[in-house]
Length: 114
Length: 110
Image (cartoon, rainbow over all chains, first blue to last red; front, top):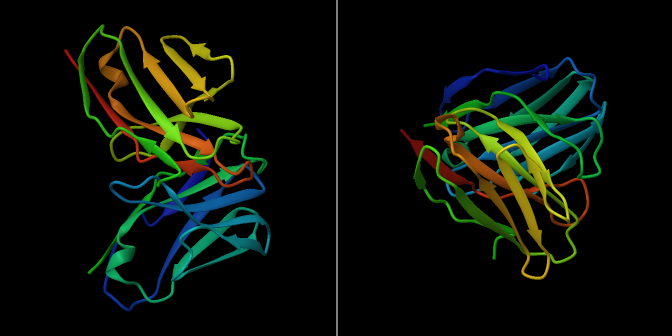
């Protein structure tokens, strides 16, 4: 299995608080992604990174920010959590970004915003 | 219209049966297609890519029908361990952004 660690695995927080989720990889892959998964929806891309300090928005980026200061770490921050951000968050990595490569996923973070 | 659509199921089948399901996609120009498997409360994992001519991987067969814009997955001789949700993934715009279907749930019973 690819070396991807997400933390925390579970988080319960209150509306309006900031939350940071961490993704750590040991594969030295250049590309990292944050997705959210909700019932009835496929995984939706929040943000992705194509290198240290290089990030871009995905399809559901409102209310989220990211940072990547090292190759191995990709942080997702919910600036002011809302109940609509209750979801399962997955980090993924890939060696390239042509759309033909295999994605490796972390184990996910279950976030509940009350 | 969603970019990638799947029948959510569930498909409940006995061990040893064959089960097949489809996934439709919105862009006829899409070039890359995949099936991922996701076990309950786990992360998705790549099951197989889907090639234009169709391809097999053991008991799994994937097909692409460009004219009707769908891909299919067939599982032969189903095992209990095949119980999972199968995610259809399409590179809709032929860039780095993959589009995921919501998944088809398969339950294999003894």
